[in-house]
Image (cartoon, one colour):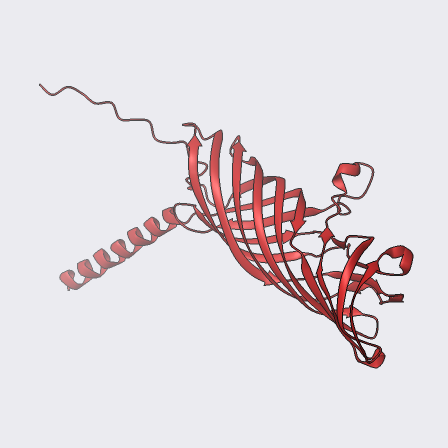
Length: 282
């Protein structure tokens, strides 16, 4: 009788010890950041279909620009008016060098005013292949000005570059990659015909990002990033029809944020162990 009880007790003790070890291994950290950005866009062909108007044409390789806003004074307007971005992430593995992240960039895409655009296809049920002046003064504009709005779900990898023993100063390089939907705010007038402006789900995008992060006093950080994004927009609302296009974006981003551990055993917040002194052997 004693042997089975002893064996059962030893099994329970072993299980409890295993659970204790698992608890010690439970680590995690949540981070959030906010900042501002600037963009450069590749040329893009905008394809427009307006069946009731007899239109099926392309505006070939149009040029577009961003509208930073933050360089006009960020303290005299709402924080969400300039081109902003936020990140919400969670480090989930034992080494705390892998994370999932929600990555949102409020970017503004504006077809440059007063440019000659090559239009080809069909307009008014008649073939067209010519260059026309695309200008607000002529009743034409094309804005994703309340946001081209890239939303990505990223996997993040952190590589430590430098840290002090007490971890009050730490420098990391991070790489990010992900995919997600586009949430543009569509506002346009094509040759005098304006759409009903508004937000919509309008396609998908994918992007990669590298960032240099400096963390001070363990909890606060600033991060400078560069990012390349490819976006494919579809079913964008225009007057009596839809438009689609695709373009690449290069971004520079500066953010400030905080990181908070979810466990007291988090290695990002635990001081590095003191070096072991070597003793001479007799």
